Amino acid sequence: MHSPELLKGTLQTILLKVLKDHGKMYGYEITQRVKELSGSRLLLTEGALYPTLHKLEAEGLLKTEIVMMGKRVRKYYALTFQGRSIAKDRVAEFVDFIKTMSTVLQVHIN
Image 1: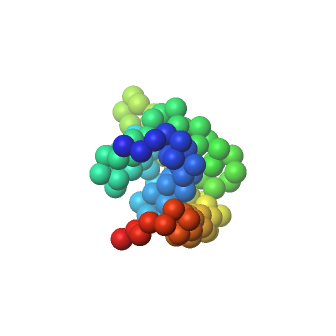
Image 2 (image 1 turned 60 degrees about the horizontal axis):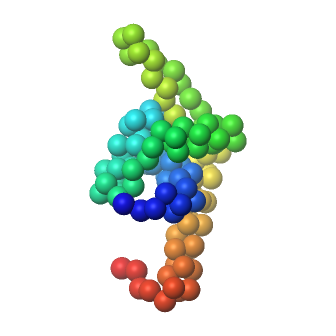
């Protein structure tokens, strides 16, 4: 597992990318997808996930849809048009950051 500090700085980018690749998802589904994609090395907590989703929604990058599942309410998150564009930019920026860090730290990444 990675430190919470590393995750905190990348959570928005992770969420944007997951939603870009997988479409409309609800919170628990997002946590499970990130866990699966990371081989259980990234575990998102509700305390980190929902404030970040709400912030992205307030910035106009996400839209929500409330769906009744029997007696339960499920809130789905999806990217807006602007969110899809920003997701692409953030991923490219992060990949460049990784390259820069590997140079600074003098490590080779496969």
